[in-house]
Image 1 (cartoon, rainbow, N blue to C red):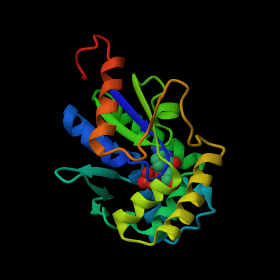
Image 2 (cartoon, protein in one colour):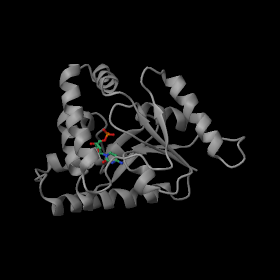
Image 3 (cartoon, rainbow, N blue to C red):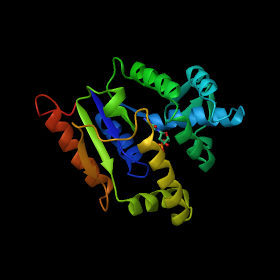
Image 4 (cartoon, rainbow, N blue to C red):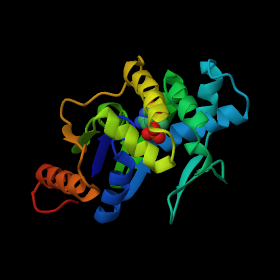
Length: 219
Ligand code: DC
């Protein structure tokens, strides 16, 4: 079973997806971390973010792994969990994610990871491009102010600055030519504004139950 969760930054995707995967006893994959890892490598290797050919090569060579128990992100064997959350990497990741060749490499890798195992995968194009046949698709959204506030609380930064950066990245993610952020026609829309983690999780578990064949089991 694939549970695809897409939506803009700060809607709560990572927290919810991780918690749901735990609860269902299946793998959690944060695809944003994969784009972030490629962006980090590009920054550290001084690769021009306007050079699609070099970025595609990098994306094909990048070995991104998720390590238990803390879901640490490894890039070519190095723990980059903290580094990929830096603002310069956030900005570069949304630029790198607009490159078609990078997206192809990530998509192929994400499909490979999803072969033969159940998982909760979150990102921007999971229900639309990576797993268009996923049985469960959620589009998780929240009001822009709530999303900026959530992110600002998480990283202890100024909310207005975060709101500005987030809007810039979201616009880039929504308007790029290749696999832009959008709600799949068969995705269920969930608005997390003002809801607790438990409330959002309950809403999604209901959707999972309704969409799984016998209606009794979530897996
Ligand atoms: O979810 P996030 O903020 O960690 O994602 C980082 C960037 O990667 C973000 O700008 C959107 C992009 N991304 C994407 O284009 N497709 C995905 N499936 C996941 C993330």
